[in-house]
Structure formats: C-alpha cells, structure tokens
Length: 80
Image (tube, rainbow, N blue to C red; front, side, top):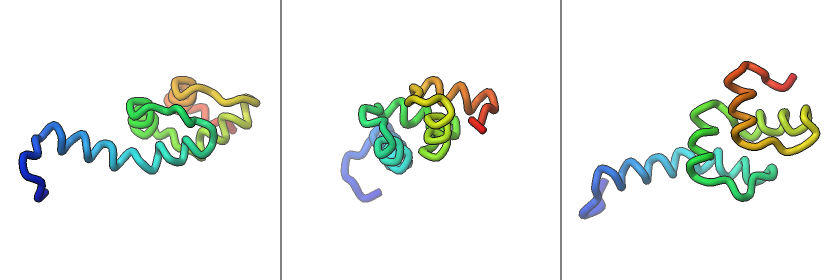
C-alpha cells in the first residue's frame, strides 16, 4: 500500500473504516449522531442503511436503536 511499517492489522482496520464511512455518515445524518464504528460495521453487515432506518423510524414513530434495526432487517420486517 506504500505505507512503511504498515501491519496487517492496521491495514484491515483502515479498510473496514473506509468501507463503513458511507453507512456511518448516512446514519449520522438521520439521527444516529453517536453511532460507534462497531455499530456502523454491524449495521452495514446486516444490510441496515439510512433508507431502511428511515422506514423503521416512520413505522415506529421514533428512532429505533441500531440493534432494533438489525433485528427488523434480519427478521425480514422491512417496515412496510
């Protein structure tokens, strides 16, 4: 990658952060300002994006937690 002393662990962490950045930024814009990197990764891995979260918010009339959104996504409850 052109970075001296780059360890495999650091390279992996950097790739994860970069691939999660769009998910994290979009979720922050719709009310998840305090989302952690771990939660952003989990959300992305479960297919929870800002669009899905927005539908969940409208359906529930509140801002569900990331865990709630993941459960909704995993159970096939698309919030329709």
